[in-house]
Length: 367
Image 1 (cartoon, rainbow, N blue to C red):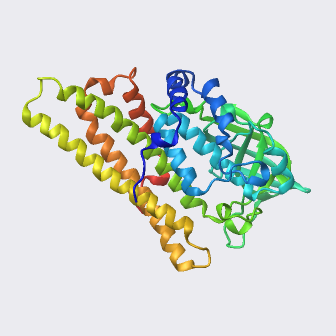
Image 2: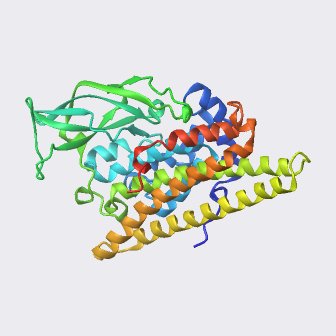
Image 3: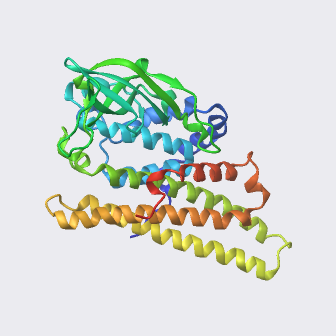
């Protein structure tokens, strides 16, 4: 299948707003007002929120391509939209009354962590929450936080039906969360990825939910799709978008070098051939990734064997695309000169964002 360039899904003025504010976002450690205004106007934080809660409820392939495009525009921007809109997907599993109230806000934004770093001690008809979590992207803009907790009864861990500790997810108002500045890495600095704590917070059972297709309360295909492949695909698309941004900037540098007389004929040939080869190989894997994603989305749930194979292919191609993105960026980087090593340049910011996002553990291994 032929997959279009990420720029085709964004209006030029959108990309201009996103990129013109990227340097300030990096310096201040959070998205800027114009960027946020664009997000609210387009309702990108609600991409996966059910329609019944005034969300977009985008199909998975549509959403993934859009997120790739936003990451192409800017890594930090695309990452925040991806992680916060991904948390909006949880609305399909939340009790109806709570979800209806939370998502009626046009500026609703959920940040959080998938780590089970908290405890939820049973107390009457609710729970008392305690814990600390790292790296909640979009924390500065969030209206609510999601967190996973191990369920306790008194001092004892409650076991699930499978014999493992029972894990519940919770949605918490921002006012009940303590933010802690913790992001000190080389890239993705505009994501506002603060850590957060919850201390002795009493919540009702209606603030808990289980992220599992069997427990979806909105009966739509989007909420029956497995969370693992949804996460793998969205993260791979982010790396893909950033890699394409890097390739676009590298191509400009290559053209400048080819126009000068400093390189020999053989060196110019190496430059051209290297770029063309990497561009072709990356494009082929990107097409395979989207083919797998579309197939998994269109395969009926009752075709269990075919669906299982399709989902396995999403996992495989997500990891291969991430690997090829790393190889492509790293092989082009040495040819880009000191411009690519200067922290004041766009290509360096893209390089730092890409390699920081690429450290996500979900796509580190091929299996």
